[in-house]
Length: 414
Image (cartoon, rainbow, N blue to C red; front, side):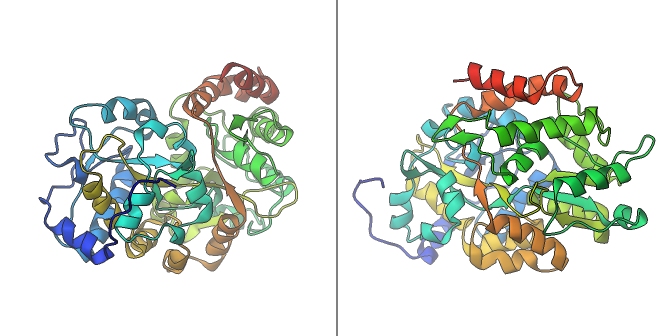
């Protein structure tokens, strides 16, 4: 807990009222970050229209409480964000707000200010947020970001392709043997049963965690955990040995894989609920969600999530926290969960997320969210991720094993 003197508590209404006195700023995206008020500018990732729509959903929901509220959005693509954020946040006109993942909070330690005092001063109760995500956002004993979601990796699937193939739909129990059998049955000729990404934290890692693996232990890499290695090799084998997925490209493999699912070209793809609405828009009633397969068939989620933090060099942390508080109220988080499909970081808002979604989809996501662990990484995780993306091509070609690749990364990256 940060130990500086606490300010008198203000109601959330007072926080939002203070926002009304700020200059209203247009919600635009850009690279320059030329806002005259850094406390109402958010540096974040904007890879595509789905990202843009998600951030706008937070702004629109906050406007329901205060019509004068607005945020300026500034930022590059997701893949570029982690290399550019340190430079951007050290510039003279740096925004006061930034986005981080729990998986990257350790890495962005120096950029994020502790929030306990600011939260107490503004009357914001941090205990209402998902415990696992608060743990993920905690660095050196202090909370560095307020999570807006708590999202497990899930298995998205195309219902019609399963039904047309006479295959039982996966659900809240699903073994890797069943998954492989289904993938084989759904693959024929030039058609593949699933799409796969070359990223580190995708199908293989999600299965490894579901099988009890831990990629980071006590703040140090444990990529050679047998369960992690075996699951990553399983991912390679899906391409090389079983030929139920196409080898992913070394660069930008995720958007291509996502598009394959949305176009109905593949039956399955592992991703996060943050993509739920995009997939629902593309597939409609055909969108299904199941748990990530495991050896036991039981649900165990690899929980990821993101949140909003305040720059450690912010000129007016209180004003910045007022903006942050406005976009992380239960009402706003619930509204975004409802309209964008992001699984909320506040338990009381899960019902809003569930509205309008098929019961079996809700059951699968909820099972993983309630039975899982957050992805907490190391300060060098960006390098780990980059190294894996570079070497994964050899794995998907059958030229190197997962044990070789993960062992080398474990040895080289400190």
